[in-house]
Image 1 (cartoon, rainbow, N blue to C red):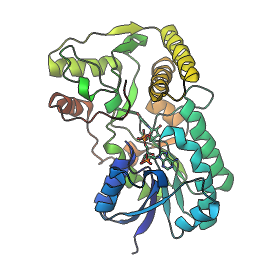
Image 2: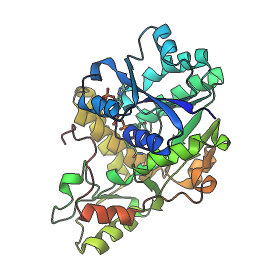
Image 3: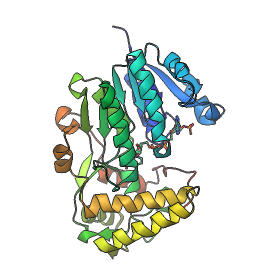
Length: 324
Ligand SMILES: NC(=O)c1ccc[n+]([C@@H]2O[C@H](COP(=O)([O-])OP(=O)(O)OC[C@H]3O[C@@H](n4cnc5c(N)ncnc54)[C@H](OP(=O)(O)O)[C@@H]3O)[C@@H](O)[C@H]2O)c1
């Protein structure tokens, strides 16, 4: 049988690099990575070429015939670009329709949430979904819960500091709201399982490693490190006020990357803890099927195993270019 041809956008990103690893490891795909022309000279692009993977370059806003040419013969498009570039998927969907792509994975890999200003990136993601549905293009929408890598409280000794982007020592709603969580390194392997299975075509699929509350996370960290966490209680009103302040800071200076990350974190506090959107029950309500039920033998890393790696100093801090 001929290999499925996959076109991957965002292979050098925090999530995309794990998708590329998993596609390569699986061995049954013919992979093409799309790299922005402006990133052609980056070491991360050279790394992909050095692994023998086909790289094509361009800009998703190039004339559509250029994108159509790149997609000739492609079966599956996987988009995993940075949230600021989500709208660039629109011309890619248009080109995919023209070339008969069988399955388009829009850039999701987040938490379930409805549109309406709760999570700015989700509103844009839903616009892309609408564009897919408009053409009845084959799709699979994958969400994975919140990363373990973004769910790390600071411990007093400071031994996790170099691995933390933004510490999570603020406790919302008493710390008891359950949340779906995942090790981002599992995002690639589960994506490969999902795209190899026809049951996931034209479906929203939810995959996650564990469901834990903040209190459960903190107990795991305290038990494993023997350190007592310094935590600050936050009310729902605090969460809304923090979002308002960070949104204003972002709007005053949108070019400052850190402002976008801080605003996003504040939005996540509302969707995760005030609204309790990131639960298996809400995902089912929103029409997701469960990868955890479809693939019961898939082994996700547990949060406790992740903490062991933190203690060993083996976790990579995400977004090294973002200074907080
Ligand atoms: N579940 C969670 O907790 C969580 C956490 C973070 C993110 N996410 C989600 O994961 C998804 C991916 O985000 P990420 O943070 O992993 O991405 P990221 O690290 O910011 O990814 C950047 C990648 O996108 C590429 N890229 C950026 N703009 C592009 C464009 N216009 N055209 C083509 N390629 C472009 C970059 O290529 P270059 O090499 O050219 O720079 C790079 O490969 C998003 O949907 C995001 O919301 C989820």
